[in-house]
Image 1 (cartoon, one colour):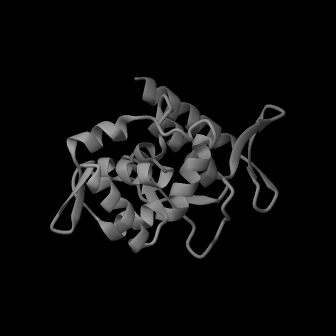
Image 2 (cartoon, one colour):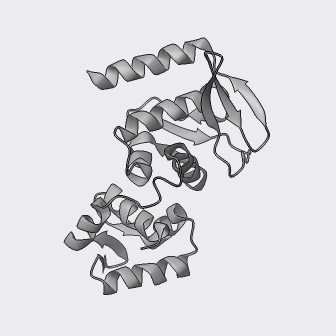
Length: 187
C-alpha cells in the first residue's frame, strides 16, 4: 500500500474514532478527491468504513495499521516528523508519534526531543503548556521542505537547517532540558 494510504490508516487510528475526509486529506497532503478515491479503495478492502461522513478503521484496518511503514529505513524519523508538522502546522508529540513513529522505540520521546531543539533555535514554537507538549510552526514563515537536523559538532549540539544552510547552536539550557525529558521518560 502507498505510504499516503498508510498515513491515512494511522491518522484514523490516532484519532480513536471517526474522522472527516477534509482532515484526512490535510494530514495526508492530498486533495479531497484523491483522499476519497484512496478511502474508497480501502473500504472495498474492508479496512475502513464510513458512518455518515465520518471515516473509521474496521478491525481489519486496525490490524493493517499495526504493520510497520515500509519506508522507515528510507526516510528518517525526524524527516517524517518535520513533514507532518509542516502539513498540520501545529501538533502535539503524541499525534506525531502515532502518525510518524512506526519503527521507533520511543516515538513520543524522540519527537519531543527533536522539536525541543528546533524550538530552542527558533524554527518552531511551543504552543501552550499542556501535556502532551504541542509545537507549531512560526506563523508567517515557510521553513522549507527539507527537515532540519539536530547533530553534535565538536561536542556541541547544533541544528543544521538544510533549506538555508544555517548552522544554529543549541543553547546549553536546552541540552539540560532535553536531558531531564530523558530522565522523566525513564521514570
